[in-house]
Image 1 (cartoon, rainbow, N blue to C red):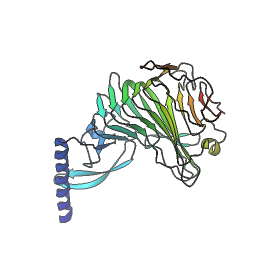
Image 2 (cartoon, rainbow, N blue to C red):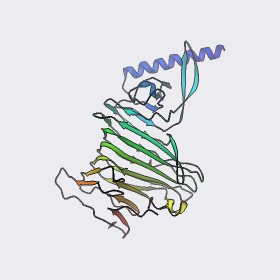
Image 3 (cartoon, helix red, strand yellow):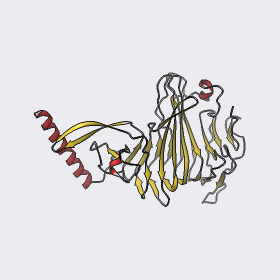
Image 4 (cartoon, one colour):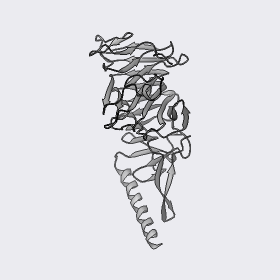
Length: 341
């Protein structure tokens, strides 16, 4: 009991010193969304501070890392008087964050823990981030959707992260669908979809889609950027990358005859007819050609608009239906949806 008492005091002193240090010096801290109290992103009770191992210990700032759904459980230090104990805090999946006041975060990473549902071929994790009317969330670094490594033969293989609301999200770095290092489990085709339904998304850098394989087996973590509503303004390029030899069309292989996941990955716009969308491209060559990566400017409806808007008034590359890549005749740019069987 005495050892527990001393440990509790030392832990309390250490946490206090950390808080004092952070108060006097700006440094990066990682905050994990736990949503324990509500959906309000400016409420410190909804965040877990990885430095202090406490909740109600601040919210992400301009130099900080924000995690949403990256972990499902957190070990926190709960102080009772002068004693303390470790306890587990679980992610409250039902409380996904809503930004209700202007904020700036250093970077933003989405994981694969969120409200669960089912779809045709397994379990769907549905994360979300909302930005309210008249509010701007600025991310000074990258926005990243992590892939799910899953397990051998797992049906836990589909992530949908929806960014929505009548506000604005500004990504001053790159927007990455899929991290570059996660490898899929054996006999797994995992899809990571980011669904854009926000009034205004501005990306100062590139949209990067990372398609990942496994160093020992032919499987895939499949990236999908899906513009479904609102305006997305892209200042640089849409870039596709392959890591560790992914298996193209793996959803065809594992889930016959499904073919809504062609090739290694895809970018789509205007997925539904009832949700008009605008894609504003401001770079001279806005899409970097890559074999068996697909771009659908009109995916499922007829209300989408693609604006070629180069502020430098240079000659932009404009894409039409079924354009071949620069190395083969493989189709990668389409203006209509692929057939759905």
